[in-house]
Image 1: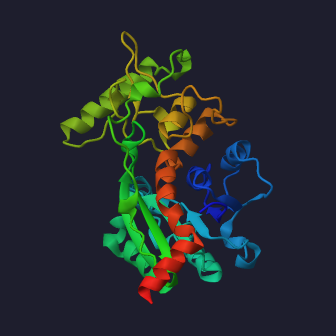
Image 2: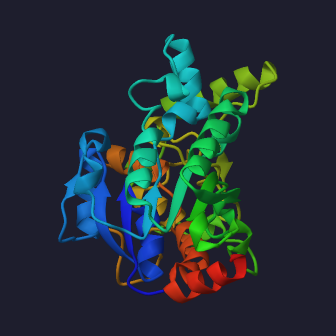
Amino acid sequence: MKNFKFIDLFAGIGGLRIGFERAGGTCVFTSEWDRFSNQTYQANFPDDHEIHGDITTIDADDIPAHDVLLAGFPCQPFSLAGVSKKNSLGRAHGFADETQGTLFFDVVRIIRHHQPRAFLLENVKNLLSHDKGNTFRVILHALDELGYHVDHKVIDAQHWVPQHRQRIFLAGFRRDTGIKFSLDEVKIPDGPRPKLGDILEVDVPDKYTLSDKLWNYLQAYADKHKAAGNGFGFGLRGPDDVARTLSARYHKDGSEILIEQPGRNPRRLTPRECARLMGFDTPGTNQPWKIEVSDTQAYRQFGNAVAAPVAVAIAEAMAPYLSDEIVGLHRNKTA
């Protein structure tokens, strides 16, 4: 189906949007509260509609009608790093977190009002186990009550990009369409998997090479945890390897993905390499991803993003079910 309409909630820098635009959709509404993410989003998606901020302040009536709702609702309340941090601070997390944990219910509010034909939600893998699985059960129950057939699956981006990055996706179609979409229909690429050498730049400024002080600290930190039987430490990788998961904290020390440099200390990835690692930018193309923010903000944005090729693959699998003809066929089968 071409020319279907979708909205992009908790949009970040537009990873999900890339997929659904390439599948023929048009974005009619965007919501993202972070001003630096908005700067990157606007640079890469020059729209005729503004980017709205805090979704909790937006009335559902003010959101245009749409066929598909996209939402990468905030990761931190459900991520292992976020939970550990909030536990150490004595703060609540998950749905008990008043600032972020309830934002899922704004997704519910908008779906209930507009009843889009379909939705795609994305979150960290740990959503499945958060609060002993209770959080995920609440989410599935809420979506079921809204009248949707929902399928969920953890998908690893390493089939498309040289990065081990597992995220959970929830795809739903309104039950009255008769469509029971399965994320197993997403096509996994054939052939050899990508390697880091595919995305590395040739001439990298010295500022990305770790100082002696930081490199010595990271080695000592890793040795300490290894002796204690823990798995914490840096991730040193070469051009034939696949990277660990890029996180929003990468700007701090780059420890999860360090690139070998013979005869020198290892280095961080550059923001451009992170864009490539997340599939936003492909070497050799004439449409490079625009990065107009600081390195710190760029690392945060890519660390929080959806791997764009994964979004493309999911959108291509869902798009055929968005046509009126397909819906009619499925309704007749279930009548």
